[in-house]
Image (cartoon, rainbow, N blue to C red):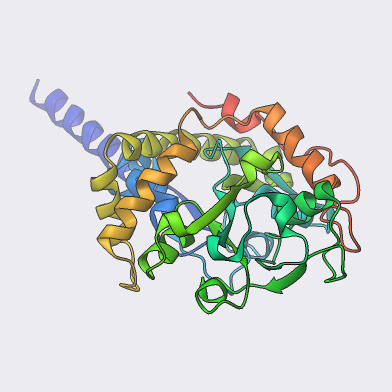
Length: 329
């Protein structure tokens, strides 16, 4: 009996050891710096949701000089967070990105104008100077201008585009009548800089019918032929969505977790709590599974952008899959 007990103890210890070593590694590359925009992933790591599904996840913050498609193409990440316009553009140029999940249901992109400029409707934008982000973020704007019939070359019947950095200076310094902002970030930077909301006019891309999907999860297509990778990705998506659910239910605590992961120390609690509230509006209603109609709307918007350098020249094929989502257990 003593020998049996000893053998059982050894087997149990072996199983515990094997379990401890069963954490599969996965690296996530974020689209931007550590902030509440990515709270679900930081929460999943902090609360042990990744560990529960046998994953050891490394979260790499992004920045102005980091292009997630290039990072994953170079082997620096297993999964990236990317906007669909940039992902589809990269796919057409040879980086075979595939959307495996879509935690963000709505777009947070908007154009914010000083009310004193007299801009009240989209028709008032003609002849104005507008701040626009590039690096793949300009395509919804281009589609909107095409829909309005405005050229973006500064000609008389169009608008003048100011290549905007990732700040709100062009509006504060009156270099532009309107600038690009996100509902959860730059808009509040304008407010904090001293321009109250009633002195601003805002056009949300969602309201203009040209919104595109933001912050989806993408992998390289060849990896989807590997059953072990699909299983790993499925566990990652499952735990990440659990993180997003927790973040929605606990916005203040989620913001604190984000701050704990901000190694730069640049973020403030006030801004991150506020951002968490706005992000919750964008993720609400999503279980992580891409809605085909949302994808088709994004593609239609991109194809209508036109211009000399369209984001995509033809309708993509194979750019999204439910294979990972369907493998969730």
